[in-house]
Amino acid sequence: KQIGFDRQVLISSGAAAGLSAAFNAPIASTLFVLEEIYHNFSTNIWIVSLTSAITSDMVATYVFGLKPVLYMKSTPLPLKYFLWVVLLGIVLGVLGRIYQMVILSMGKWY
Image (cartoon, rainbow, N blue to C red):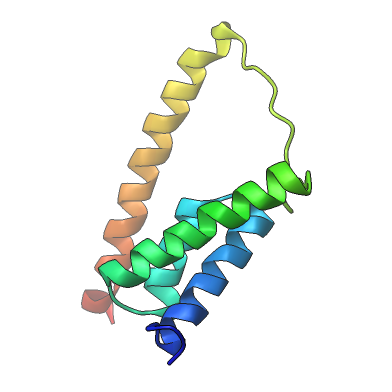
């Protein structure tokens, strides 16, 4: 043990910090660590990982001036396309639900 933290807490916080610095996504990196590395929810892991992720993101962005690995320049979407975006969201939501129903019913077919 190091300063009251066990090894798994340090590994989880380091992984969250690294992912956050690389992809500029502290919340996503914290959730990834909780789901994939730690495998269950722990308040201690969550707080330590989120703190390290936010800190590393701020250091990478404001101290070193780094951009995320998958940086995409944002361009404003003209107002005339918003209706199409809403329709696309509805269509993709329906297709996603159909896909989920097909996947869940595969066991009945085989």
